[in-house]
Amino acid sequence: MSRATITESVATFEQRANDARLGQEWIDAFKVNNLATLAKLCYAVTLPGTAPSDAQVAGLMQQLRPGVAPSLADTSAIKQLIFEAQTFMVYSLKSAVQGDEETKKLAPAERRVRLEKQRAELTGITIAGPLEPAHALYDLCTAMVESNEIKYISPTKCLSRQQELAGAKPEREVQLDATKTNLVVKEQPMVREITIASDLALHQAMTRRALALDLVGLATFSVVQRWHDRLFELYAQSPAPGFVKVSQAQLLRADRHSYLRMSETFKGSLKNAPEGKMPMDDLFDGLHTDVSVTYFLLPVAASASHHSDKGASAAASSASDNKRSADKAPLSAGAKSNPTKRVKVKGAGKSRDPMPQSLKGCRSRTPEGKQICFSYNLGKCAKKDCPRLHVCCHPGCYKQHPYSEHQ
Image (cartoon, rainbow, N blue to C red; front, side, top):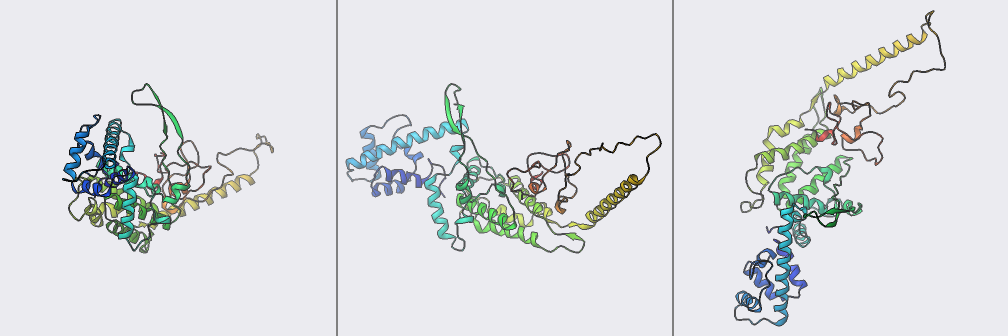
């Protein structure tokens, strides 16, 4: 599969050639001679920054199609392509040196060609609506290829194209350029996330991620889906007597750890794969027998949480009885009664739902006494103005991530 960036994409080269009105015979000649990328055309005649002469352009065209006299329009179009190739290449190198993420995005023309091919191959699934990945998801997968590192993409970041289009546009801000002498206007990077409110939403998000990995050329869709089916099979399995059903938080932890394990065991290159396979296919197949990943999907014994609930209920009942006894007891002779003064207890009068079973052992408040949102830690909070804190409820953590992503 061809590379995804603008300078390495064959589809981008063909689009630029068509825009320059270059004849299809010359485009095919570039493909036959393995020059159908802007990166290769940039160095085919002269080095970047040096304009080619008429004799050099004529010599290139004679090598592409020996014995064919090019028209003036074709010669002009090739000169335009060479200029654009040099411009794109210089910008790409400059951006790579400065660490600009723009160089790691999937080229629009390449994305369109690959998506059409994917829809033709995967006839059993409709890549549209809730199953069409967002363009930002393709860019996250492309960044893995360019950096040659396997990184975890949380299902909350796997937006659909519909959700991406419905979101707000990124704001612009004034920044200093690389030389620290000029001001430039850039868009602020937006890290959009979605709420996984149901098992269906989670399954669709993971399917979109599998489609994005397949389109970029990291893993075959069927291989990734086979692993996802295994995860949901363990998730839906009925627990044995005395055990609690596997929670969604456990599934998300297993999903996260699977990518950490693949990152640890991967030693090759994400840009080059054996013939007929993609770089991460063998890694996904190896997860089925990796005990360190399936460990997170083991049912939890219900006895400990059951005794804990009984103990908490008994303690609450005892405290209630003591309170009633204290209310009925007479005041001592030296005590002064003040019926208008009430003692304020921190947090009194605020009722909330009990802690979910999958968060047993976690904290409901921060050390400062502020309430923690249980729904956020389960990936289900859809309130934009939630009155509770969106921090991890693991004891001693309290960081800006849900409990399902706690390490």
